[in-house]
Length: 618
Image 1 (tube, rainbow, N blue to C red):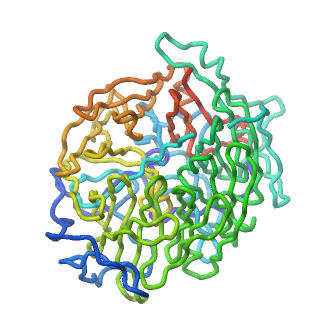
Image 2 (cartoon, rainbow, N blue to C red):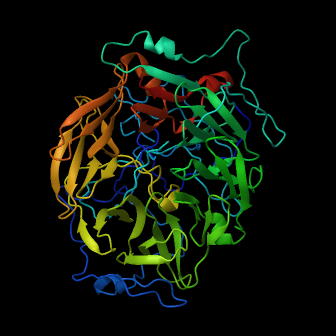
Image 3 (spheres, rainbow, N blue to C red):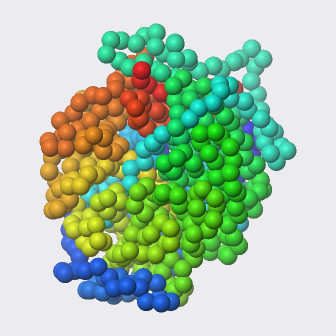
């Protein structure tokens, strides 16, 4: 494996039950809430209206009624990570990332398919490895956390936490074809090789080999790409997928690569001087992305503060900017990124900046007053999570705003009740917000003008894949998997039932007008199923693979949840599909694209041969 790479410790993180999922639970020693629905802790005050215009120097105003305006002396500040309602299902590893075995089976019975954005099963814990000294604190920078995803069990949706959601599914030009090439690190130090015998070689399966056992009715493996890069000691997270014309791109470590969607031929490869540390969920409509990279290669002093624009169609690097993160609190903050129209945001707890993707011009930055946005959603509608605190000793108040992506000016403001914080946004249109307290979770639905509409009422254990338990502990504000929404309903996946011999779950549809369940659709027998997004008026879902059966892309009818298969992955590729570390799943033009959320293997050659992209379809 590669040379030593500092691991960013996961701080109260929630990622996935197996290898990367975000599932909700109560802290140890706390009484579990009764099943049977949300209680009243987040019932809104009657007659809530859109806020008045913001007053100069004070930040945007919010709804003034009832409990919304009462300070909570118990709320911690300032902008520190709030304790979450999540508890790892397994003991915390002493090391940041345990090494993965060759061709691991993520579950004895059920593998974990999602990463965003995003796997839900119950895989055994990987072997523990000794960890190098953890780094953090001033100068450690933000960006995505670099620790092995922890497993979190979902508590009943009965505990009140508002959820809003953006689903992360990439939407997707050309070039020549060349194979990936690994090069030396830019710090002058080559990754140290793991000892292997002279006659030992590692080679991943080819598409032809996987298609040899394909059965009638199964899709073929269109193409497969190996990692091809020697990574640092504990492996690296992947960024993407992003589509630009006829190119699908991904980033890892110090390289972003683009592949032809037709046959997987590498179209371009862009080497970066330092590590990738943050990225948005999706690129611009014309195929441009801006990523965050560290400002140097130091083991302890690197900061996630440099922005690099990349044209995904050509692989050419565009403008580059460094964001000043010298303030102590800023240096400690995680970075959340998004792209909405021609605007890229670089969000942190105490200050956020927005730049024009096309030319790098700064559009807006830190606001005057005590309320500062710390994360934004991407896509057609930009929503912001906002934190308000006048003095360090004051309680933190949080808001959700719709903002103009060009000026940053708020269009409306919805203020959370005291003690609640924004975790993620599941949908921007309609606005559906996930919120939390240390021991509670709720999902709230807003009207298009930012007023309260409803709160979900459920009696199941629900699981959503967002990478971390909240945006302030290491994920983007949008990009969750396991959830989708249309104008009238929210579709949410459940966790497998406790004590079940087979790992299977359901998708529950909630009426957004009432917050109540409309129907429940069981996954195909013995499988796990998770919503991705809406497709042609139906709920697009991914059914994950099992030991000897490939996964599927399917749909659920919004009227009653009837399931139909769109693309059946071949059983002959199930072992390869199962080996992917909590893969992110994209579906585009009749093909499914699976990328592991992380790559880490015991041996250098095994690591290079690891599957980086797996594509199904004609």
